[in-house]
Image (cartoon, rainbow, N blue to C red; front, top):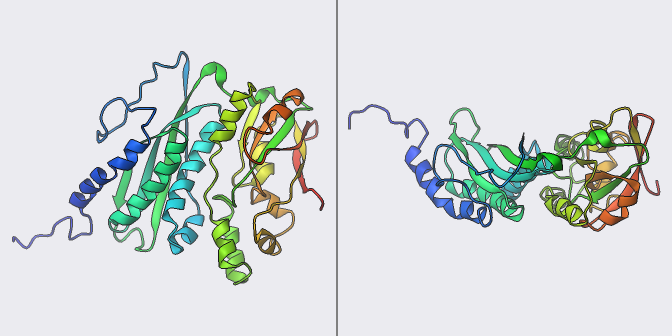
Length: 331
């Protein structure tokens, strides 16, 4: 031994990292049951053949899990973190009318932990397999001294494609169009800075089981989109309800219009206990309030898409006054 330092002694083990890439090949293979990469897994970049599209338009998106990640790590819900990471980007791709084709992840960790990383990727692969999107690659960065030992950094990137004529065009929205909402499965991956603040200031305000329910993964809405296509309907717009709630995520679609919405009471167990400590107006601008996806369609098409996915309900119509106003039915 020369006595000189190695990369491993500095906290980075490239040999273990290379072995991990081989170990996750099974998860990668699960995401290529229908779509395939052009070329072998393990290259420095991934290739996908778009020749099956006549007028291909690429669509891209990236996102993370936000401060929900802290609670997921505390409770060892690593698979949920992987699912959230996929859903936050894939759902955004779906709003364009595009198909999610390729997904890449970034994992930053203090030191390589094969079990944790494999579980994260397993959660990603569960969701990617469900929506026929390929896990095309990613980056696992060992960052000793930068990333704390009890923290994992996560980012996700999705690439999709659409035929040019199939792209969703929100500029076609008109007064009288109908907004159809689809239920969320949980709080999803937004608003957790406020959730964490409430839990800190009001410990015990929800049960452990209720908190576990809050942390369930963001719902993938590929089933809704596919159901709407099967019904022969092309929506004028889709909205993925994330940070900012219904008002902010819908208002970005409107040009001089607005909407008056009446939403069902959110039936997530324990949510009323949490919301009791949240400003009554700010709740609509922070949480999805039980509606994670919205399709905007012509009035004669609204009934056709109510069964496109579980939880479909008519929320209201487009009006000629700007702004989105939301109230809960029965309140």
